[in-house]
Amino acid sequence: MAPSSRSSNPSRKTYCPTVTYGPSQKPRSTVAPTLYPSKSIPTMLPSLGPSKKSVSPSKSPSVSPSSKFTPTQRPSSSPSRKTVYPTCLPTQKVQPVTASPSKLATLAPSNGQIFDVIVIGAGVSGLTAAKTLQTAGKNLIVLEGRNRIGGRTYSNKTSSFPCDIGANWVHNFDTTKNPILNLATGFGLHLLPFDWSNTPTYNEQGAAVSDAVVNAGDAKINKLIRDAATYANTLDADIPLSTALQHVISSQSLLFNSYEKATLHSTLQDEFGTESDSLSAWWYDATGPWVKKDGIILEGYGALVDNLAKGLPVRLGETVTSIDYSNSFSVVVTTATGKQYQAAKVLVTVPLGVLKKGSLAFHPVLPAVKTAAMNRLGMSLLNHVFLQFPTGSLASLSPSLATIDEFNKIPSTISSNAFGYVEMIPLLHLRQQDVIFIEVSASFAETMESKSDTVIVSEVMKEIHFIYPNLAAPNHFKITRWRQDPFAFGSYSYANVGAQGYNGPTTITTYDILAASIGNNRVFFAGEHTSGAYPATVQGAYESGLREAQKILRN
Image (cartoon, rainbow, N blue to C red; front, side, top):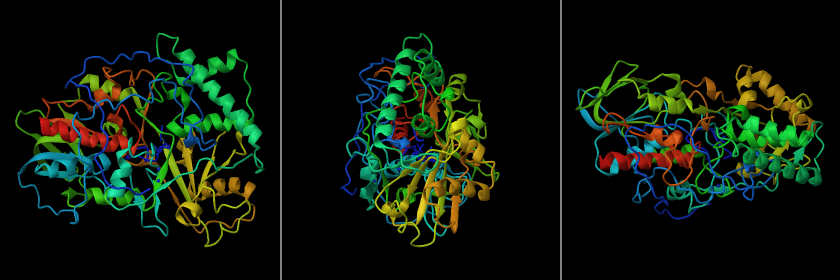
């Protein structure tokens, strides 16, 4: 978390939102991304039954850095977390895509032309695949329903201040583990590390929470999550994470102060973009090799997307409504404008939310095993609120915001278990902007989407004024509503009860099932929701684009 980097989705603090969509970093030379051994994934996968993962109490989950309450590692209940590999990356290395000096290529109408490949969606996965295929000499076209590229990875440049309204964080901030870092620096972009260690926390009334309370609370919540994972693994069937947590809370007669309540919420709901009763107790946190470091792209994620798209034949405003793969020689793609395009192969990179909504029709219909896999994953919600203040407003505040990357406010409503605006990121230090950026997730974000901008700004300012009572009202704001976005219907994917996560090199995960091609290797799928190793992240989206491009080239 986090559309955060958690994916071509809103940022996963991850991811952006484990985002948290949502959902976010240091320049070096471009090198090939480190890709990991892959397994062979059949075109049709017959089984969906999840298996239990091994849990070691010594590998305790801990409060997530994306929660921003503490600078410790993101939660994990799997002892294999640091050693697992992406589930279906190509076996040979693929050079990162490189920028072409030309602008987006222009296209004439298809006029019955049969392309080698049609890529549906101009987000990170689609653009990455298209660039790789174009470099290999394939004749292709990219169809994008929006009037812009980037999907959930988008920097808004039309307001008075630029901001990443989707993916924000570059997670897994290590050049040996996340190729996004080398890709960004290869494009000449600048990465800034995010400092989770300097994030003061304030209570309901705006007073600072002591280090003693923070340290004790973190230890208690870490143990709760670890014990819940251990309990869940004694069962023969997956259960909601909330059930496992409640079992531990009841059996140990646990009570929580306001800091502990907020930390538990921030560690789970804010990270994964959904309530814990929707998360798989076995697989909610499963990822590939991960380091507990995050950062941002100084120029914004949009600059990375712009470089990926240079020279590619992208057609905007073409919302694909159906894919007909019923014949043996070509796939026919129809758009909302009534145009039809034909290709030998089609790569579908639309978000999981669009697939689950049924906005895109397939002929024949998708195999039942793939539809069932979609239902075993959910689409989270992580929204952003950006408040811009008059120039100089933040620099004069006390406590100072000039050197911190984030502060946390325990909601004034937490005594009634009502959560709200917790994580507040002043962009004065990172971007020299008089802007405070707030991340809102899960059910609170769902409720927020029905409120007016005026009400949302007023609610946020009420919490901020507990700490900074004299801060003037913002003069500009930007608020996202990703659930209402018809090209996303949410922020990023999460593992629901019954999903199968990574559990060894031979495991066929739910994400693998969504990644499997159909129609005798003529319709392919990419996106963060097809990455078993890095779901809900920009890294997962990028690597899935490389993976599918190589599958297309091999077939």
